[in-house]
Length: 144
Image (cartoon, rainbow, N blue to C red; front, side):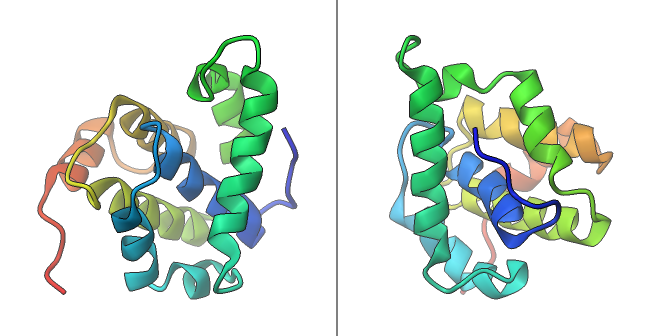
């Protein structure tokens, strides 16, 4: 899997992208939530950068998943640790987690893969607990 510079917009956006694809499909509502929260500006990404990040992540995961048949099957604890280590700035971690939770909440269903990535972010970054992450995702999204 490619690496990005530590605390770069690409490294941060890739974690949000991992949540977006973790349930096996990408929902328009997830991108809508990303844009509603002004994700590109929040992370310093070009306005059209998230689709590129999602595509690059999928390409990397597909290369690793060729033998296993599932992109998320190759996302083990070591891979999660490596991805999370690329974002070590606490303020950026909180932004990424907020955007990732919004993406996970967008379709009003928390898939196992999404919960796994959110829990890993909280665990590796020392932000809150897993029960709190679940309650944030289960809550109704804010009114527009």
